[in-house]
Image (cartoon, rainbow, N blue to C red):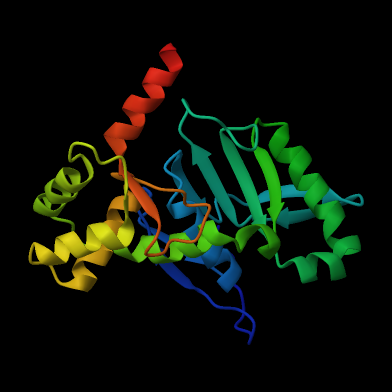
Length: 231
């Protein structure tokens, strides 16, 4: 059941287009929206659902209804960063969590016990964890992933990055070569961001994306990792 939140000067509500099966994810704050953007580029996540369930929990002997913010489900054959395939997230500004800790902590402890008894993880996540270079990169990559990407551009980028003797190139170098091939600069930039989001290109997304970011073709990285595993 979806919560009805009265408007306030601090709340920003809306829906975010997404690659996940839900297609549109409803959010009730800027922080929640930015967390959903953060999750968008994690390809080990199979699905994300907002306000996934409303449950009854007991807090200080009283029954209360509780609707968490986000459910993330990882693919079943990947590493689970929180120890569970399915994880419930409560998204809360750190300042609010600190100010209202005495009131919020019993509720979150009860929710954690409820979900963990059912094999589902539970985490409270704050702006301190959300706002990082990876989230800033996701804010660039997410919109680009919703733009069309032609097979011709993919083939050209593959040729640029798999040229004999080339291990990697900077983002600006690949973009310049695409512009020289006839693309507009913005079209080339958005295509490269799209390919980073789809993992055709591999880069360190824990560092800010810029012109000097080194990118590699995905198949070369997989082949290199496979060779290391057999050594």
